Image (cartoon, rainbow, N blue to C red; front, side, top):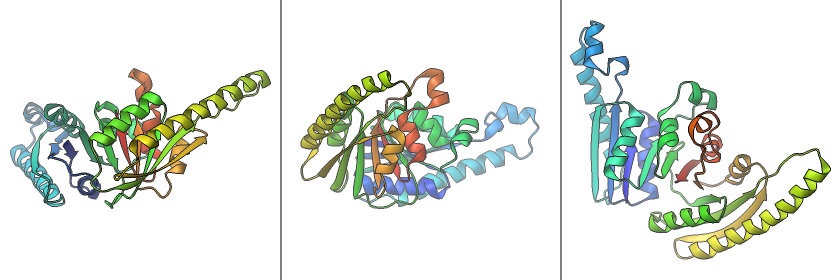
Length: 285
């Protein structure tokens, strides 16, 4: 398993790296820090602005970035075969994504400062941009690192369940966990009685399908690595998953995000869960 983890000098970043070591035993970890010099990323702009002491400023920022990734190395377990670091002048999120592509990583790990949804849209954050543009599974770590004992696996349909199940099997957690497999049947508030009657029939059929999918997924995953229980609930998917996650250490969810402008403006169920959940979230793509 190859992992790229984004590091800066925040407590959240070091907690994310530490959480990685508690959750998995990867074969290779690359700790990266993009040294964001803002408008002075280019020496030409710095020269045009006549910035005094630019070379010293740039050197100090690069040195601080190298110290950050080296500190990140110290919070990882000693049993990881390969831990490498990289710190270069670059926009942080793009540097994480570029290195993940170059390494052909299986997973990206980032911490989050838990900005409000509005702040994310207007200002952005590294975790927001990584989640939005990553094409591989992404672990968003919230809060302090801790052992993961209870995991909530939220699945939407058969294809989603197969993909997530395969990833969990190929990339096992470091330690066995108690796994709750959850599927949500969306609920709708409608006024027209005839429409509501049609929805009732659809909802009952959808619930039967959901119960079958979680049962099949539980059967496939049950074993020494997972102690499995199942749930099917009705409600708004984001709210229902976050409510069900109370008392869990990690949410695992598949991504069925929107594309283009809709993806940027409205996000997706997985993004909504990341924003609202009280624990870390692993988004499987």
